[in-house]
Image 1: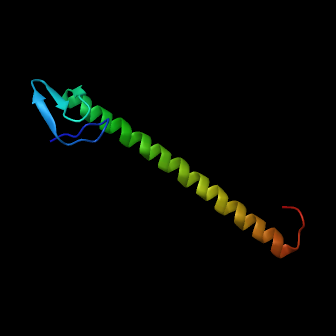
Image 2: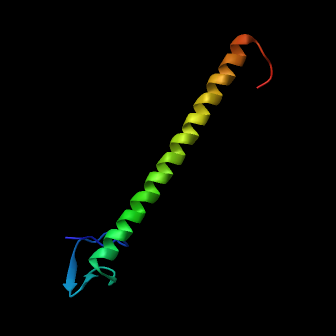
Image 3: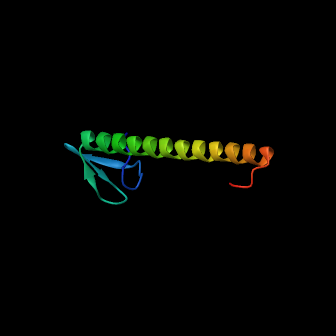
Length: 76
């Protein structure tokens, strides 16, 4: 059973060829529900990649700063 991509409700009634959400009243075709889920999945993956890249940059900066500190350099 598909869930509503807007509110997440799993109780949807089928009114051929649509599914109607019992909570928010939105209606979708099964293909539209799948497309919305795929789009959300892609967006989440992109956010995750961006977060990973940010964390990697911060880690490299910390290592660089630590090396400068060990070498006795004053500039950071």
